[in-house]
Amino acid sequence: MRCGTVLHHSSLQFQDGTTAAKFLVVLNSPRPPANYLCCKTTSRQKNRPGSPGCHSRYNLFVVDPCSCFRSRTWIQFHEFYEVSVNDLLRLKFNGIISIVGDLDPVTSRSLVECVKSSDDVSPYYLSLLGS
Image 1 (cartoon, rainbow, N blue to C red):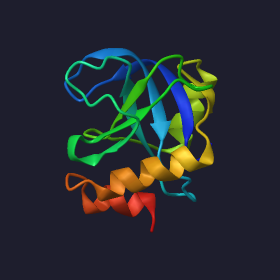
Image 2 (cartoon, rainbow, N blue to C red):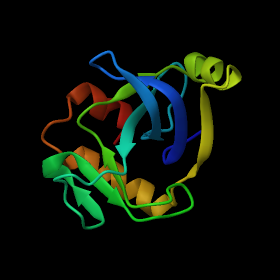
Image 3 (tube, helix red, strand yellow):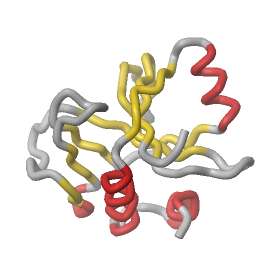
């Protein structure tokens, strides 16, 4: 796995304690013992910007349909999910996480730059993204 890998998690637990099936996007390519940093997605626009690309003011990156997503998708980085290599392997082995595919390299780099340009991302999470 690497930056831009898209995962399907069958029962992601949100920070409020609820769970749901969700797509996650890996934001880094860590070297052990560092952890993977992921963010969740949604396909519901609601009151979100509709144009593709970076909307760091809203902690969103919009992706048009591609090999990983059947419809326009909003990658949300107002919450992050930090996962160890061991936990990811366990979740994959138990059938809870599956690899959907990879975003193209240009989109992956643009997403990470968008996350880095947000005023709301902590220095710790920025350190996991590297320079």
